[in-house]
Image 1: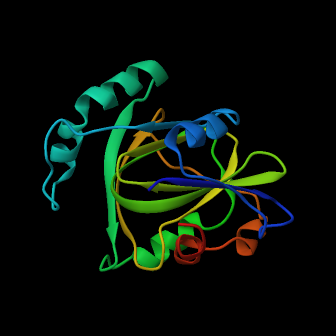
Image 2: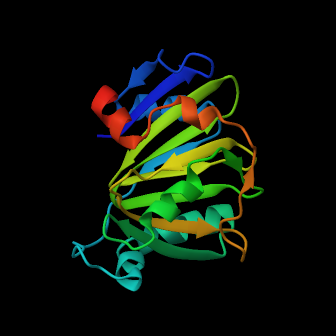
Length: 186
């Protein structure tokens, strides 16, 4: 189940909670975030490689590439047994921005996006079938959890791909990680 909570940045324990897809999408759209659902055009095996995953979502990918000018697409997969999962997780846990907008489609698993566009923090639990687009220069961070299980399509408008500019803020430390968030809100 996709989930959105909205918290005052100075009071992380307070939250508005949304579980209805249309309500989540509407709340996120108000801050410029695209939130969609995609479906594969075929059943995917658990161990599907990048080419198979991209082929299964080709129509949706091409539509978004045309609409947004994306130049490249890839698939990232991180599981609990990935040798670098702790390092990958920590790479995304600090608040940062990008000069480009960030787009992720969850083929499988789940992850938690924290969006900080103003004096509120929007926490979005994304799961299989969810697409989220974070606007350029929007402060945010991401948690894939201590035991990650995520397979996601990433789209980029630049050849450099994921380039972060960290804000040096410690705000992320005040909000729950994926496991604690799911236990409290899901």
